[in-house]
Image 1: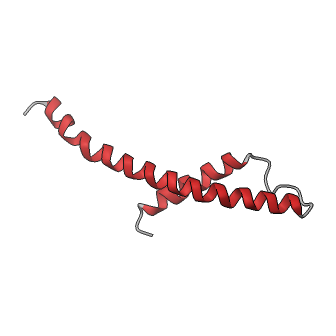
Image 2: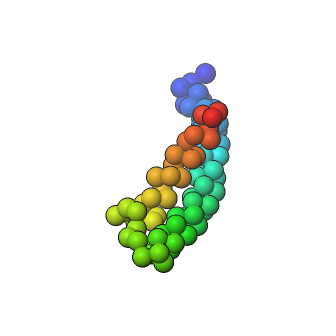
Length: 75
């Protein structure tokens, strides 16, 4: 067996794992984006400044990455 055949055979499970990760990340991102938007809108409606300086998308990206990563750890 050549080295090329080994890498070719091992490429399929990894691409499946990445697809699963990206699907979970997208689902977490969508849910958390709504949550963060409502939280920011509530803070602004109440007359309070936003809780962080970062943008909503930056906050959601961090939370979605944590959500997606922890979903594959068996927690």
